[in-house]
Image (tube, rainbow, N blue to C red; front, side, top):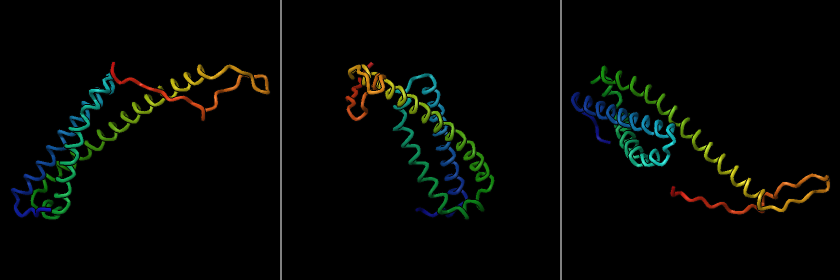
Length: 150
């Protein structure tokens, strides 16, 4: 890690990390809006940019962490602004994780339900020893193919 040795360099580094947080926050909000609108494919396309910003933020954060004492003394006002920005970012990140987890759970539920319906249709309709129709054996399920082109 490069040492930060001047006030100007400390302020510049804090400003760069703040700008990265702003960009990543905006990108995550765009991603959430797309998922809410049902445009999951467009939201997934943002993944590469999101990953690149997160990587740059990690590097900047590690540099700040390695020089934390000096940066706090050199730029206390900017550090306070950065801390406030980080708290807001955590809230957006939490919401983003919930939205993406919900979308994943919903899509997984749809695929599981579809797979179960197809398995029931493909299984022979027979009655068991209790006189009731038997459920298909899950170990004898058939593969499910999904076309991603619409």
